[in-house]
Image (cartoon, rainbow, N blue to C red; front, side):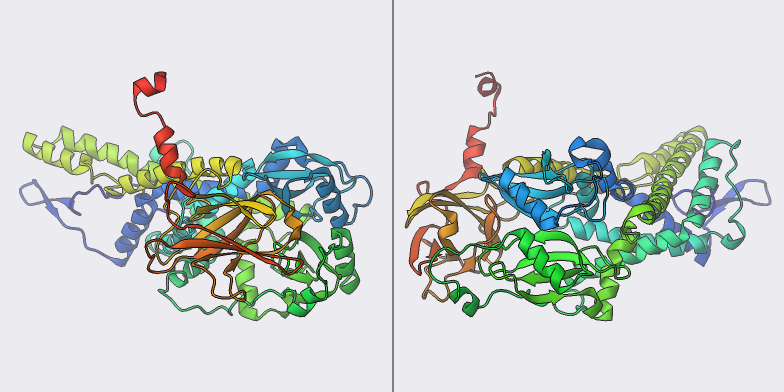
Length: 599
């Protein structure tokens, strides 16, 4: 909310006002800095300096409220007809896997809270890349695939981290704090705001006056919503970047390790390749254990020591629909652990409530889900209009101030005032305009990486450790710093890199465990970080030593179900032979001149 649509704009000019003296000449004096004016200046600063980026965050957040509904409208694969009772969620997943052989399927969303929406899973192709597979939960028939970055998914990711590597989530969370500051300063700068709730915008006034009225009107009626967005965003800001970078202490309970299979459980399976239970049998075991539990996400084990994880809900107040979890032995069906929302500490429940409050997803399903989302969308749109209208108001003032500066005073004064307004670091946004454009440029680069990532995965980037025979398997590795950081140097001293494994020959099911480690493992008990994930996305987050010695090697260790161990190694750094830097190869193959392009 702006305090006064006719107040002097911050154009880089000295704070002053004209006052006639005894001789009738105008004499300027500086305005007194009152609490009202200080609040106004702070409010204006927040609303202007990062207005372009702020608008992107607000608009994408507004659209992300209806992320699922957008996908339902845009893609026929997402829509289904209700046909009586739905199949067991595990059986639907089993049928999907039968119809999609040779690919990795994980993160199966059951759509149990949706009557006309298909269930889906994330598919990873053998050579990398991601898609979504959609299946009818009433029949188990696969309806087709879409890109991972659907319209709804694109809006959600853009809002959460702006497709910016490393710092994106922290940057977005900053705006939660700015929302709170803007709320408080707006109320202070708008005198007796409580009397203005029914002061409607003057529709017949000039555009600047109308926008000013609209800005204040929407700001008043959006107070409760801005407070929710500000509090939830500030809560996340405390976690990232403050806690994340060691600036502030963590007050949330430490995350506990998920229940897993013990050495005794694995030993009981014998030395042959064991056959896991079907997903249908896993769901039946959970429902027998807890009939009130509603499964929403199925996560099969990503390596043979993990449990089959079922995420869902028991309709606990203000929790996400994956707020409770059961962990099941994938070979016996025994429930070996649980993390239920009703058992969580109060502070954890507060933490979990932030997401449904921020996105308006606490309506759960049916009419109330659509009603709450509609309210959140309307007021999210109002916040977006607040941001855009505030920016327009100040630019209109800038235009007016520039005209006055040019049309009054001596030539030298005109030039000076025009320069103060139009200099690169002047105007309403001052030098922050370049920061806005820099952020927008990085966002565009991140978006291009995101689309490239969904089609290629991490293959074709970073360091490639060429295929070698390891026992009966032929395997290659690929190192990247991370998904959105796939084009950065993947091996950096003291950091963690992501190593992806690609099995070209041999039976993957015959592998009990697969490990990677920088340096040769001293014993079989400490072979390194375990590789996990689905086909095409088997990976390990591997720490790099603070000092990388010359000639350092990357070791791969495989333990088979028959108890045998197999090992091989590559040069950790590119040697032009077994290990190559794919980024250099791509750069060498990219045309850089007109002759190369024409050739």
